Length: 163
Image (cartoon, rainbow, N blue to C red):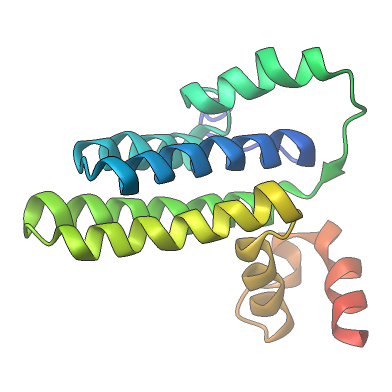
């Protein structure tokens, strides 16, 4: 059971960016169609990825089992802990969007949260900049997250701090 509720470490950055591209597509569809029920799908995907990595998320399964193997591109391993943290931010924002839309009828708030996810996912998918990973590194630098949470991140964090 514990293995089911785990997150891969390391993570293939190519797969992460492709999943982010799928999130971009879904968030854009939500904003264009103004269909709040689609936010439930978005939230499910994020929660599934946080809890189980790519084991339950339809988008992550498609990317890791179908798309990435067919690309023939070498994997680019990156630490999984910051990616899980980033997925957690997406899960939080999307669950709050569901609550705003269905609990309070605040569709504008829900769409603003979806818009924030769209921006972060676009940065990851198209530029390779993981906003959640950057926040994770900053939290490690200031001591909120202990270095033991991601020992592979320590060198990266120190390099960024020196720059």
